[in-house]
Image (cartoon, rainbow over all chains, first blue to last red; front, side, top):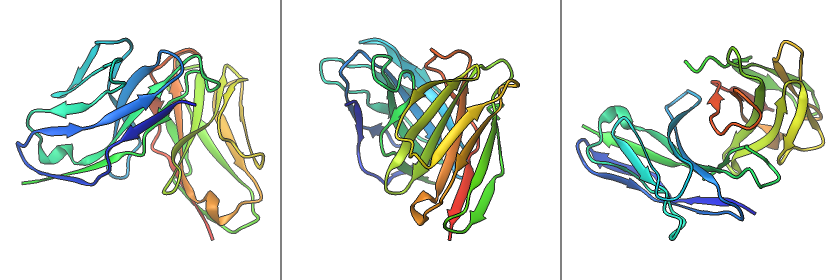
Length: 115
Length: 113
């Protein structure tokens, strides 16, 4: 079945450092890919998405590129801020799966940015 | 604020009991998804409803059931509760039944003692 693998956290960075969170996926179909962010005590918010190969999703300085050849969707940000501290989830949605358009999530990566 | 509301925010109950979690989707959204977030299993899809009808099923236990009402709010019923059912339960909504973009509520934290 479909699955998403994320790098283990927690990730601790200093403010203004470069961020990469790795995400790879396995899917039988041609999925759409997402990054969601969960701030402490809150629900998940869609951060960015990409629906086809080579698409780049971007939002709030974060970027991720859909790489079909390496089945990856790594999240990057050039300069993190303390306010970026949160848990980041990579997810896919494969309309050809039994779950339809439901999201299949990775285990999440906790990011802590220190001043 | 996503526009999705969930009640209650917290729920503490005993093993063997039954609880109902409620979700109101964003205005205009016809589809509701339920997810469970636990420490061991991570975030898992449970079930989806679209305009009152069940659309897709994930890893939902037989002790759990859901429905979506004519006003589009949804309820998730959990019965014969076990300690392992302690988790955060999220509801998400989308405009249609075939939409990738889902908006999540703040969740209901269930603690089974």
